[in-house]
Image (cartoon, rainbow, N blue to C red; front, side):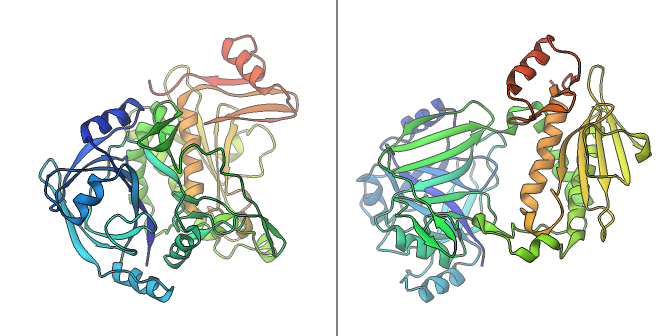
Length: 461
């Protein structure tokens, strides 16, 4: 049984006014349609499944759903999506809950599409504010707009956080070991859920569970999105809503759909794998000296190949396989590639260099992405290849994507002075032996520093 956070249900008086408020905060909000019970909604969503549902009564009649929505404002409930609602119900019954039977539901979208689901109330009735309800999508919505907001974290203040924690654990959510069952991640790791108050610190098996005061929290519910635009925090319909800019603000991110298409075709039967240390769980000592499945890391090399294909197919550059010994890597790389691809772009751009290296038991276990000649390394993955340092395929593939987006976006990549170096990252910088790294980068960007600078023009505008 798979489970994940699905959506928040937020009651508003006027859907059009509410949608305007969310759009003014930089969050797309579009009509989702009408339910047979008489409620209507606006959806705040992007390319990932989790979303916010703004809901209002669309008719004057009385029924439990309309009455609950009509008389409320702000967050009234939330949903956990499951792939098998009957298996989820059984898991909750075994955990001491008394969920209602699952019933079908549906909504007709403005374009006439019918989306359908099965829904199961876990507590007293429609849109209970104590426990989430379960939803199994039987005819799901298509993904939201590619430039829509991505819901990344949710902080809730339920009446009984321990009971909610029991429910999440029963459904397979993973509790962070540093909190007393108050911070959870989905099995897939895409979104985190925090239950406030966090509770008192508790020592357990050498790990100190920590907590923070919630006195300063202005609203009982806070959520955060990543967006292609700017960041900030605003109160919307009784919730603290934060946004941060993500990689979609870079023009190179427009290649990601083509990369995904090539990746799906090239990967064959190579499988994803979850983070083996969810919620910050400490690795076992024996994991530091082993890698049970080194072949799985071939997936990273396939991702770099997909990026190279997407770049060439888009007409942005040409790719050439070169003899690994003919290439120099800046710094002290731990990899000695067995195959190297150099991708060259237009005038003023720095070439992107991809190296693939073997481990003791796998031919293509490591990748490194660099720019320039000699190549300044932007990213190496996996860190060391042992099971202790494994963070799961989703995280590792994301770092590869970030490296390519950075490489294609141009600007100052690195500044070197002897043994000291400052390297840009997609969302900041890293430095070795430099106390004023930002000044180095600013001087290089302004042309006041030229020695040891690796910089280039963007590949896309």
